[in-house]
Amino acid sequence: MAQAFVLVMLVAATFSFVHRYVPSVLVDPIKLEMGISDVQFSLLQGTAFAVLYGAASLVCGLLADRVHRRNLVVLGVAVWTVGTVLFGLSTSFSGLLASRAMVGLGEAVLGPASISMLCDYFRPERRGRAIAVSLFGATLGSALAFAAGGHMLEAAAAGQYAGLPWVGDLAPWRQVVVLMGVSGFLLVPAILAFPEPQRRALAVAEHVGNRAQELWSLRDRIVLVVLAGATVALADFGFSIWATALLTRTHGFSVADAGSILGACMLIAGVGGGWLGGVLCDRAHERSPLTGRIDTVVRAAIAMLLSACLLLLPGGWAAVAAFACWQVAANAAYVGCASTLQDQVSGRTRGIAAALALCMSIGCGLGLGPTSVAALNQQIGGGGDALSTSLLIVLLVAGAATLTCSWLLRRRLAKRGLSSGDA
Image 1 (cartoon, one colour):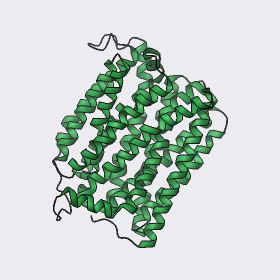
Image 2 (cartoon, helix red, strand yellow):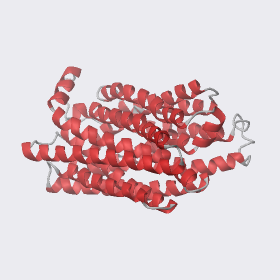
Image 3 (cartoon, one colour):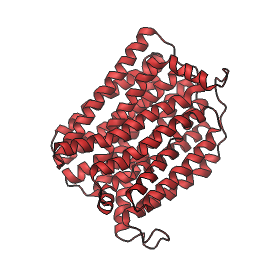
Image 4 (tube, one colour):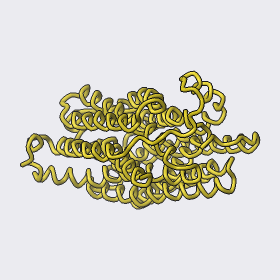
């Protein structure tokens, strides 16, 4: 039952990231039809989603610690799926913003509720790998959005979806978004097939104030691990959202080729990095329960910085290599941060702790990452080479911040000899 539930959460996360990332593949046709700039698109793809996601994730985290989590996930799936379909049907910039906000609202449910349930399905010695598998959905969904999105756009432009009811008369990019959005409803019966797991370690009274007191008492650890994850997300979202434009504008790739290549990188390197991060976290935790998992984040942050430096090399395939290496390092860091955070808290605060981390990650990732790259790109000059330079600056600054936060937390845990959270 536990293994099957992990797979369903993997599929759910995959769908959520497909719906989250598909506008990035369609950036040029969306900009052309709607008449918007790079900065406006980054606000559309990033800020509109991030604001609602961040605000709702805190509420959803509290709900995940108190209500039926499975049904909460089903509600979230319905909301973000409808939002994706509405994005494909919107005819104004304000409509696009509102629909992206709706997607953010729905997806805010999945992280806190799924991680909370996974921690009840698995004991501590297996949580790292379980969380890693569920986080594969981010990589798989991103890869599918890029790979399938590019080819679906070409198919739509060739009229292959023209005979479909309700969709055939739409612009090609709208056909892609609506078709991907409707597919999300397939998740609902799969999730409903699983019962709500029994919560672990709930002997303490279920009062919000008690949760707040616990989190406040752990603030010296929680703040650093949350910031580490947020800075990974800032660079990762910035790189991923502008990677297609980097290959097409700067290096002359077609949209379909860029999507296929980036999708393959996300699928192979991203999944490999996530699994590697989970295995390393669990093994390091066995050797050193206090600092093992955060040690993985420190090493991953160093690898992130080295990956970014590959953008200094000339040629499109050097950019592809940078993206692939980045996927390995960033996904290992994500798993390390999520596992470290769950080790620090008790069973009654897992949902809200995950929500705090997701709120910061999405706020920094989608809210600041794409816009930072776009703003730097315009400041530098807006040409193809400017985009590569802008990405390099953002990746190096954010990677250095990740390394600093994870190293400080590692020293703090080692110095104070703090025990891990309960199982």
